[in-house]
Image 1 (cartoon, rainbow, N blue to C red):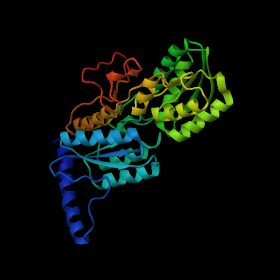
Image 2 (spheres, rainbow, N blue to C red; image 1 turned 120 degrees about the horizontal axis):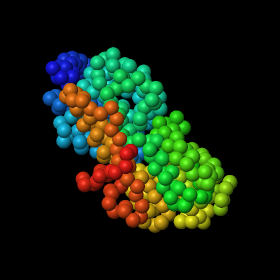
Image 3 (cartoon, rainbow, N blue to C red; image 1 turned 90 degrees about the vertical axis):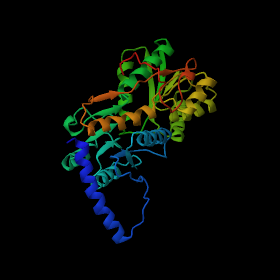
Image 4 (cartoon, rainbow, N blue to C red; image 1 turned 30 degrees about the vertical axis):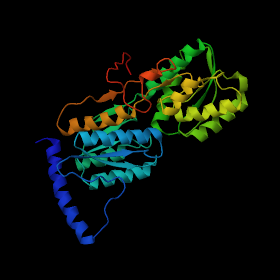
Length: 340
């Protein structure tokens, strides 16, 4: 009997109990995040830190729901808004619901372990999506990680920066949210790559918290401090890059200072077309959530899955932007030659 068959039996028992309790209590239905169950489909809970509040999150969940429908899966999605305590409560909800599998996109770097232990005790398999866990985390607590290699993102940004500057110059860095896994690892990767380019100097950095307005404020502060010394601005997110672009424009530096981002959001395409952004990396929310879903399905069906599956991260410039759809899926014929 596969793991999926065992969990399906548990779910049917739980569903009957819950149905009787619902009729007795006459409770309301249609709570946020709860899909209309198809009883013969497996239910996979997705604990995500962002949904409607962030463009990438919206597209991740949208692609997830479409893929779930196509693959006959009930996707039970809960958003914690980057609050680790809320996500911990959501894990308890998923366990109480006796879902077949759980995919967690951690709200806070390193906060996964207690939740993974709870799921293991409940006999529910877990995969991790999007934000790679710390290396010290016991790998037996989860089956697989799928998503971007965030340190590789930083490295690729560093390589593009060195190329654009011709190996010599200066830059400022607008980071993500302190404590967030993506923010931490992308900065680590960038710093590791820049160690190979001693003639490129980091003038200063400030967090932008993955927010356009806060990134604009951070960029304005850095521009006020360093002014025309700045050759480039690097940020690990296109939404923050758009805030930095506004600060550069206000200072009369738009198009004169190189701007590097990541994600290839719609705003990045516009900036690349206008020449106010130099380059970005394409991170597909479609690939991200779809692979999280299909990998968990393989786990439930007893198949062997890779411990780590990294998504491709194409470099996008003004010259090749038409090859990719912002916030979309990778082209069907795309092949990635780099080891991401």
